[in-house]
Image 1 (cartoon, rainbow, N blue to C red):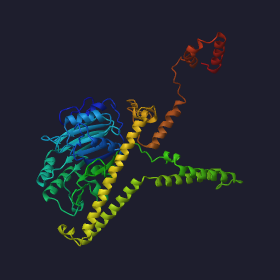
Image 2 (cartoon, rainbow, N blue to C red):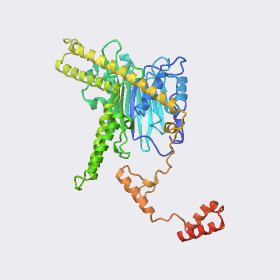
Image 3 (tube, one colour):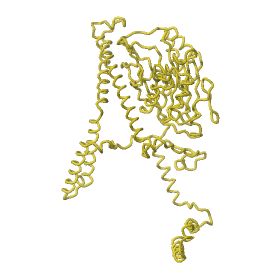
Image 4 (cartoon, rainbow, N blue to C red):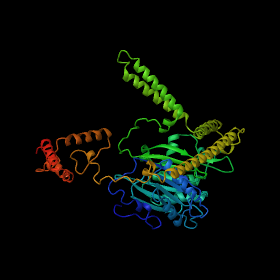
Length: 528
């Protein structure tokens, strides 16, 4: 793919052209890619039908959650709409779409959203597998690794759903690392409340495809028989986990942090996501804890810091005899530990009320679903009768639905508050020469083509690097130690001559006596 721009599914050049030149032979993508899926339930056009408030929220969603690749379904996108989004978000997002061939702005549609903040490589291709239903992304993640993701939007009709999975299996897609999207079907009854088995033909077709691709449901494998859902029917208490991420068995060890979250984007679906790690990337530890900056202006924390500092001063003055366990260093260490503990406690107490409410609602929902799971297992009756057993199952269904609605409402409010905060910061600092303005308009320089020479393995040709942090430190140490014995000047060149040449513009304006003094000093300081 090097040297040419791959073509998109509709024949046009993908927006990766905007990234051309940012990376030629070296990749600067993150070692961790957060990959998510979301049914956005339409374009959400504004009054002029060209702008979309919903896509403003999608941009906020990928930024706040540091999502590298977002697979979206039910997009209702066509080429003019994508061009308008590119004009608006071209420096931040890449959007590759597959529209519905008969009604692109009113039905179906799938797309990939690539976050340029996280993905810097222009090397990717997209393939339209089933128009408006399935699109394949092949992304060159690192020099030695690419990731292939298939985004699907399954039909609602069981017969069409079954045929869709069969067609995908016959399409000879090759290796698929991640299969994700809105499947509009579940394979197990526990992925619905009330418990209900889906069409057996469609389930069998999806199972056959998963076996053919050697992929499995990552969230279910991680969370066992726990209950969690991504979609709730608006007029009933029924919920289901229609949106899922399947991962290839061979790379299961590279994936973690499987989760499902509400988004505030304006859709009735929740967002499943997973973090995919490049295990060959350098190991980076958690680093040191630092006090949040906002605590420096928090009056209760300022009072606590003064009290701890006063106590430190008195303890230091009280030391009359130094011992191994009681000396200025140990007293200061205890002060730092007490200060860190106080700062952590205060930061936790300052968590916004809305965030605490969300955490409480999520805990309540999980406890309700756990009770529901245990009760369903104890009853062990046919699925058609479970929901009517004495009313207790139905009560749990209603309570879980209420919790879900409240969580979605609060998440939407939190999302809007965050949007307003960003807008206020933009108005306040957008035209001022401040740190925010500099960061917003700063483009980091590219690494040199040959890499970081200080990190090369000694004597390696072509250059060879390590991903072991300890070995990196040793290589850099040896590199700079060896520099001490290397004279960078070629034979016949004297430091004195170079210094005189550098000072010549200044010395030309000095009186003759000062020139003579400077020449004597240079002669004494530098002897060839």
